[in-house]
Structure formats: structure tokens, C-alpha cells
Image 1: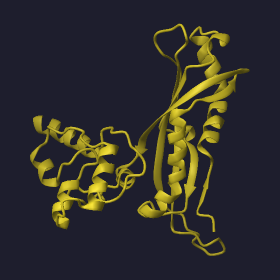
Image 2 (image 1 turned 60 degrees about the vertical axis):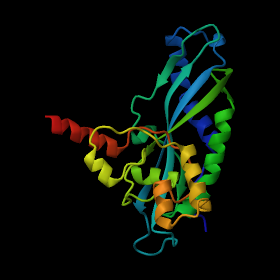
Image 3 (image 1 turned 120 degrees about the vertical axis):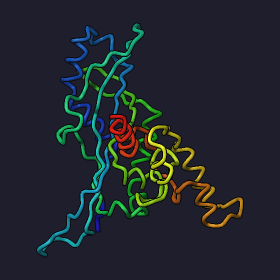
Image 4 (image 1 turned 180 degrees about the horizontal axis):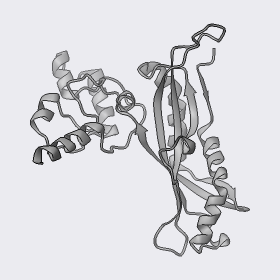
Length: 260
């Protein structure tokens, strides 16, 4: 009956940092920061990844009956920096040499769920979102190199593909008239305008638009309402940082080729 197995987020991060203990100590030594001087001010940058793993069903019988699809949520420790008490600038003491490698990617949660099944995905990932929100505001005290040290975590959800971003931000699927996950471009507008695109969507704004979609305060028709909220039809459940998406990259490339 289990549809998901996962680690608690803070426990998983502790494990990942303990794995990097030697790297952290070496980084401190190379930066000339003596052990005793650096017990607080550590910042850890975490890249989160989440994607469907496709069909994982048991083909020949004999195994448990599971849904056809699985989704994996994982994270990578991208960098660790430290701001010592008497220093003005942060010093990076660890950078992941292979940030996109399978080897640096730590699994946090495995779900037997189709990535398009928004309800189940939201239910399973809700606790993960709550844990990461709690960690944003708090510090983790962890013994590294024999001394208790204080870590803060910064999360960047940049390892999601377009389909997953749309699920998490409550946008219509990729066949929508509103083609962009960062702005309100329609297909017609994007085909006319190859250059001037700006990032206009934010997580908060998407939440506000969902409320408008849900309550319809101006008593509009479905088409008018859809035009007002620009293709937001469900409640966003995980904030995503706006980084350049595939569409704008394509548009930018097309503009360059057009010039050539």
C-alpha cells in the first residue's frame, strides 16, 4: 500500500553535509580560516530536482501491483560558503565539481505517481514543502571537524523541467495558449515578438490569480476569466525561482539565427 518512500528533509541534508565533512575542512584550511574562528555563518546552496521516471511497472508478474509511473525528488549541494565574524565578504569553501551528475544528486523522495496526477503529487509533496519552508527560517547546528557549526540553507528549484514547473505553479499544460512559464505570452504574441520578453510571473502572483480563478469576483464568463488569470487553473504548491526557461532560450536563439 506504500506509494512513497522518503527521508525527512533535514535528516537528508545532515547526511549530505556529513558526507562533505572532509571537503568542508579542506576548504576552511585553504581559505586560511582557522577551525576555531569559523563556527557560524555557513551558507549552503541547494539545487532541487524533480522529474518523472516514466514507466516502472513490473512487466512479468510476480511483483507488487504499483501504478505505472514514478516521480523522484532529489537535491544537490551546489556550494557551501562562510561569512566569518570579522570578514566583509563571503568565502566559498566548497563547490560541487559535477553539479549535473547523477553522483552528486541525493534522492529525497520516491513516489509511485504519475507526474500529471496533480492531486496525488501535491498531497505527497506537501510535507516536503512544509519542511523546506521551516528550514529557510532556521539554522542547523552540526558537528563538523569536531566543532559545532551553524548552517543556513538556500533552496533553488532549478532542476525542474517545463512540465514539472507547470504542475508546481498551477499553470495549464504545455499545449496551452499561454506558452511561457515565466510571462504571459500567448503563441501568437511570441511568434510576432522574437526579442522583447521579460520575466513577469512570480509565485505570489500565481497564488493571487488562482484565488481570482476560484472566486471569479467579477462574475466573468469562463473565457474572460481565463484571459484574466492567463492560464492559471490550480493552486501553486511549490515556489520556483524564475530562471530562463526553454521557450525564451529558443526565442533568443531564433533571434540570433535571424540576425545571422
